[in-house]
Image (cartoon, rainbow, N blue to C red; front, side, top):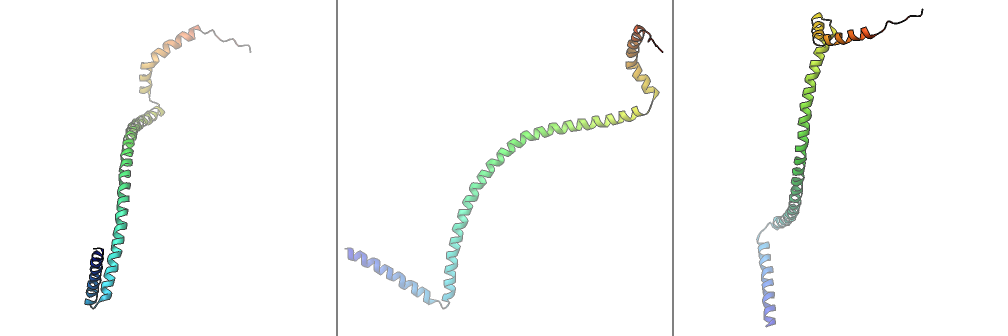
Length: 143
């Protein structure tokens, strides 16, 4: 029984080898067949390498997506801060423009502005100033 199985395996192997030789010698361009077989084996090796690289890139892509989500969440907080700061910058810029216009107006003496300021603040200052002048004693000079 063992001889029968070994004989079957041997004849099967011999048949495969003989069939390959007939296939191989059947064509006149054996060099082309050899190059095609070597190219096929090289393509298989390259395909395996590409599959491994593809798996690594997929894993890295998952990690990068998670990190991008974290950064977007942190960026949202920072964008709120930047938005608030930009609002304040605009307010400061508007105040700066108004302050420059006011400074230009104050550098030029204008009696109307002086009168308006005295109307608003001047009466109180003059009232307080008059009381202080009355309370002061005249200064004594020795020389």
